[in-house]
Length: 351
Image (cartoon, rainbow, N blue to C red; front, top):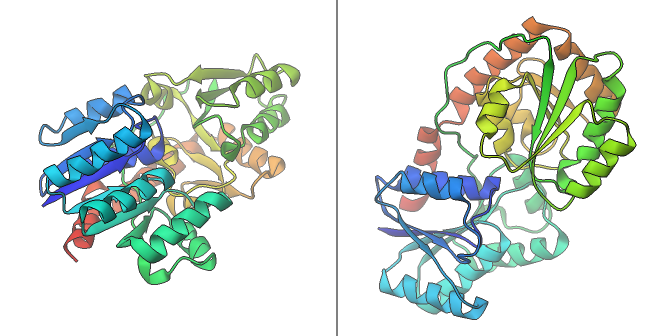
């Protein structure tokens, strides 16, 4: 069977990473074509991951939007594609339209969050209810939300994200400094301004902290200005899209997530794999990834005091940090392995 995995752009995001992991997971069973609609955006680290599996055929289209779309249609015909998996609203739209033109029988559209803005919600609802074979969600909170907003329940399914190369648990080395880290795009969803308020709230009680913000995005200037305004320059470090994120996570002590909404968070899985205890807001499927007071702490969105208290308990107690981190690793291994992810998608394809 010939399967296309379609993204509009291959940028450094969680949805794009999961699309690459899907390609790798299915490559031993099907002929996989990984298609990037816009060749202008190709994240090197994800290209490297794809190229680790030689049987995956990688194609990226150049030219105007219309030209790239018809190149895609021609590619579907020439390679006798049987099935398309698309990621995010724009790719979902192009996948459905191209399938209608070329006669591809199965199209699985993908929504990778627990919330969509109104226009994207409207488009994806039409695609799901009228045209897609099935819409795949990566979180149960998203399933509830979208069904409440008019998506047909019998046209949706949840397949959680996976995590590859789960490493054995090891305790952190106590250096005297406590490094708190957040990784994610600099966008409103991640609510870094609440995170900065938390650091401001605890800095006098715990002067040995360093807060590391790792990512990139449209709010970078505003975040830098807020750090200056709050007098936090000696406590906060910013890393712009570095190529050593695993090292930064391994050297950290605690992971902080203040997101306003999520699906199944890749960043949290990466943090758990790096043996970090978690403090996070109770959004999306965070309450499935994090077992409250066993592997981390969950708080309400924007609750600076609760986030600060949870961080304080971890900062002041090394044994608590190690216990939460070890239990988190065990939970990740049981529930988010590549093997489980692979089997879920194979069953969907063969249905």
